[in-house]
Amino acid sequence: MRSVTASGDQDAQDRALLAAHLDGDPRAFDDLVRRHRQRMWALALRTLGEPEEASDAVQDACVSAFRGAGSYRGDARVTTWLHRIVVNACLDRARRKAVRPTVPLPEQPPADPRDRYAERETRLEVERALAALPEEQRLAIALVDLQGLSVEEAATVLGVPGGTVKSRCFRGRARLAVSLSFMREDVTLRNPDDPSAVPPVPPQPQPEGGPT
Amino acid sequence: MSQHLDLDSLADVLAGESEPPHLGQCEACRVALLELRAALGEVTDVLAALPDPELPDGLAERLTAAVERERRALTAGATAATVTPLAARREDRTRWLPLAGGVAAAAVLVLGGVFALTRGSNPTNSTSAARPAGTAIARSSTGTAYAKDGKALASELPALLKGNATGNDLTSAATSQSGAGDQAVPSKSSRTKALADALAPLHATAGLASCLSALTDPSDPGVPLALDYASFEGQPAMVAVLPSATAGKVDVFVVGAGCTKSDAKLLFFTRLAKP
Image 1: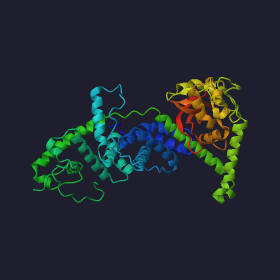
Image 2 (image 1 turned 30 degrees about the vertical axis):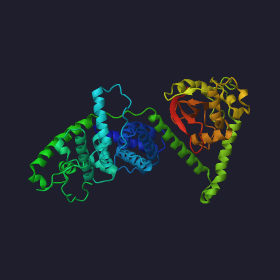
Image 3 (image 1 turned 135 degrees about the horizontal axis):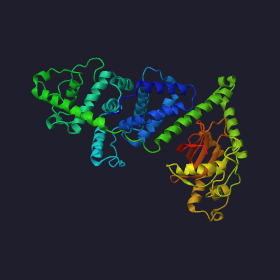
Image 4 (image 1 turned 180 degrees about the horizontal axis):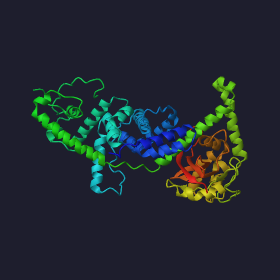
């Protein structure tokens, strides 16, 4: 998990930068982008899976945030607001260009000299498994497990109830457990994506705002 | 006994989102649930250890450039709104055309009449970099092969601003500019000639004015400090050095040969210390 979400101090600084930008400070928005671009990039890459598309989405998000800074109401952290803009930019790109968000990551990504072989293999395996998740589960895991947002914040970003985010996270993690071979084979057979799986019990009535 | 719980159902139980009655009757599903609980702990550990992906080369510069373009567009819009009479704003949109035309005409006048034209190896202007903005632009045609690492841009910047950069004279190599045939430029390599031809539209006053209006405030077209006709990562490109919003810096835009008012064809952007 990423280092825990930005502290209150960091959010106060973000808010001050946004206010300075709206007051006409020409450097404030650049500073805001500099503080968040790494997280915006990580979220976009894990949402879209394809570096070029992710780069374009981050650029779209920066422009949208610049233009829409006046619409920030202050009821969520600035980082939450930016996450929502990045997610929207990613989904717009995925839909507009008919690029499936589950595009597999490159087979031979550039070697990172800091990676040891085993670590790199593990990382690639996890990233491939993440890329293979259904979009809604991958987004929930990216926001909560990788970006460090709370379930409530992720719910704000995605515009769904907190219970839905929680369910998507658990279902996504369960699929990862299967694809990363952390589960026994006979349980694996119950993977709902597996046509040979044991038929599930009929769906339980879900409470309002429950899992989708 | 009802059917076994599938993976999603087991996950929902662990999320606290459901309590299916089947679980109380099925030892196998209770075992599976415990195994999944343990496996989810491993998944959480693996996710926690996943490093942040490195920001790709050039993305930071792209973002700065995109924001800068938005800022300039916003400034231009604000300026236009300020100078447009209220009555005109109440009229049909076509009333804006004379104003837009006037701005474009002013840009052409500045580009055609005021630029201090400097040609690569044969500089005719070596005024200081401190020349007032809007009075002269050092225009060079060095043909330099600039790259994403920005080193050549940084090293050439002082000479570009002073107007004494040296290199291939692309302007005279361009058949479309010189009006001469291929035989007129036998000393130029085919690559230099190809660069010059590709960039010919940006040598022309109207083409240059159109391109610069994508990068600058069109109400103040005399802003650029220096231009260089060159290449970037193997593509024909023009370097435009503009004043920066950051004190002590200049904004360096590298645009492709197809740069126009509607699309700058931005290839690279960097903000460098003003020499």
